[in-house]
Image (cartoon, rainbow, N blue to C red; front, side):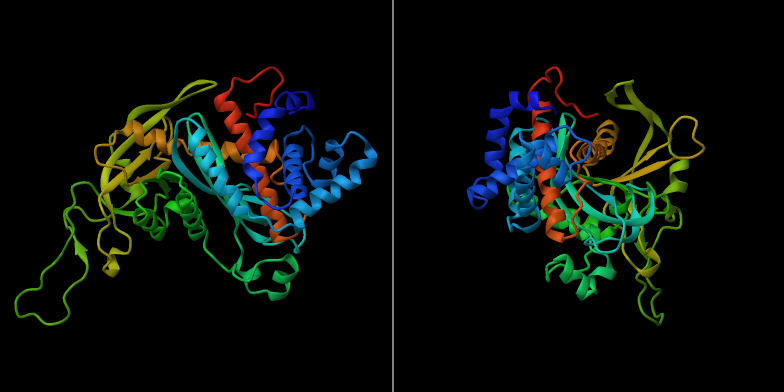
Length: 411
């Protein structure tokens, strides 16, 4: 966004920033937070502290003073990331039209060296490989008209969780330990619900959907879901009625705990999907017209660890996608939505997860989410929070106001 456009939006941006930083410490701190967000919004190849400081001042002699204010705000100041995300979640919930889903995922930040908080050789879906990087789990509110990030938390690898010296140097709080990504995701959902955000259906990829404990956590919170799973997931097929076999009278030994259905034994999702009946479903109109593919949806029960006596899961939807020309089905989802949910609704919600990928793209390419050069835990999270604040402003502007000439419309 260039200076001319930003000046035209000055009053609107000032009101937005005031609502986000009100009461967050002394006026100097609040002004620095607002300046940092403004620096993220301004055009520029790098959105790290030094180049942003240079863009925020009219006189080059003031650059160093601005740099120090931004540095103090992001790396040292103890303002609450959770409070900013609470306010941002409430604002998006109130003002962003058409919201209907929580979307969860994690994103990677490539890093060199070993001193930045949480950096390790670990898998990143963003990079598509194991590499030296930081990984953060984030929660987004989404609808067809827009989306925004309302929570982000770094995942701390095991090597960091046990390394007292590195933890202290990077400023990692004592109460932060090794926590699975799916637990971080549930924690962010709890924070959003506690702040007054309404319950929405939860969308996630197989990295979360394959975890039975994660899905159970969503059910315990009264949240419906449409989550991706892998084809190796075992399920009881449609029409099955698994039950525990009764022991014959007088027989010895412990009663059986395993469930059986000789007519419909458990199948891998990838195997079951090949025998289903598919139909063409369209879900969204994009720049190249309506997007469509072939889908099938059936009611099943999960069969996780059924050989160990784990009972069948509750009946739910299995949604499968088999694109025209593919040799086999390619994607699979489980959904706890009601049995009368249409396949079109299931597909539309499953595909709505694209919003988080777009958010990541905009936050990194346009707002510098992955440009932070500091090494501390606090600095990383303060930078990520202010990037989410800047992105929230853009999301609301695009959804509520028609774009003017020259205004940023990240694609």
